[in-house]
Amino acid sequence: MNNSTKYAGFWIRFGAYMIDVLILAIVFGVPSYLLIGGDPVINTAIRLVIGSLSALYVIFMPATKWQGTIGKKLLGLKIVNENGGRITPGAAILRYVGQIISGIILYIGYIMAGFTDRKRALHDMLARTYVVKSQTENYPEPANSQVNI
Image 1 (spheres, helix red, strand yellow):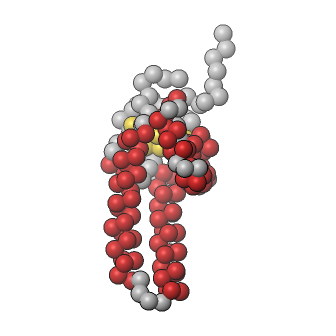
Image 2 (tube, rainbow, N blue to C red; image 1 turned 180 degrees about the vertical axis):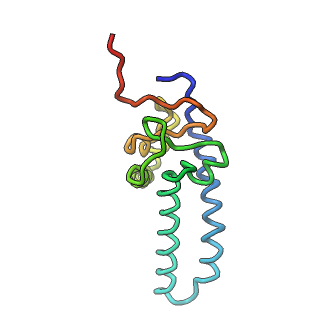
Image 3 (tube, rainbow, N blue to C red; image 1 turned 30 degrees about the vertical axis):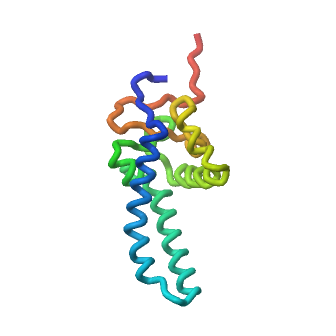
């Protein structure tokens, strides 16, 4: 493993998450508050659309050239694959599924980032991703690489 790689720990990742929550609350929360009325069918449809758009944001932003959400970008973080490159949409979807699982198991999957080597959460392990500080020039070596002497 390369010693100069700077992995993002739990608290900075939590900060990025909170920024994203704030952004999504403003972008989708205010309009939904104004649109939701008395009709339960319309309210449900609005919630489904907003939930879907929020999920698409969280899923596909890591697969863009930003390599993360706006919160991660603002805090100087990016999500990389085992070779230090941009993750694929498939890996981004797998990562999102892992985030749902982490939430179901009392957020233990998220908390793992504070205690694992390379500061990986459960969803990082499932999708074979890393969250690194974007100023880092070197990236993690693949987890299965071994040196034979």
